[in-house]
Length: 317
Image: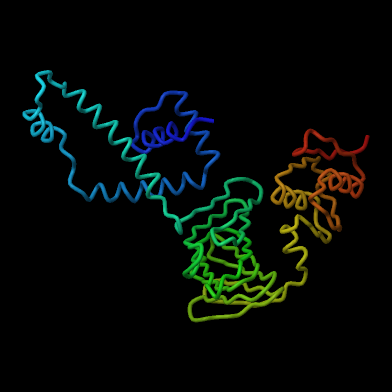
């Protein structure tokens, strides 16, 4: 592992858009991969800083040189190129220092899930979020005071920790969800549809001039200004992913496998004929090999294991 001073120097060069050699680029890409949240915070700080710099007067190196050169007591002249290099290095160090020092300690966090499976994250107030593929959460949450504010896109499960009456407010498209402590799903779609499903506690959903309160095992569907409130008939089927439990009722195996992959990241491939089989069962996704074995028995086929994250269902010969 490279030391932090080295990483800070690379970050300074990276954000200053200086050229990095092959090893340096590999090191910075590895650091970004291992520290995605911190990198996004740094990136936002630098974008904000860059905007401010564009608004500020441009530093004039030639003018500065003209002022400094006559005052040099030594007879040995510093070449203008040397001055330019010094300026560039100084700029990189300043950028790195600003990136490290100006990280917000209480807000402006972003979580993105660009994988094919669900991802779990812990917010600064110890609330939990589970992001489904392509979901994004932007939050401003102080650890001990003030209301907690979240913007989101996609499908996200929230498990909100109670915090001395502090509100937890979510903006999703044109609607708002407000809670004190509960667990629920919020899902937005590209066509401005939205769905809120409550697992525990109580939430208030506001869209335009309409407002509804939801309790355990209730949901609301929002399409434009239209709000439809319903009961959740099969809570285990809706919220089973929280404990990696999957309940299916007469569903094609190919659809069940897609859900398994989303929840666990484990891939199960199969012949097209096998995928058409409809099954009803309860699966404990914490025991994946037993799951695949059960699927094989239900579909009267065999399974092969490539590794812990890849199985195949094949028709018996």
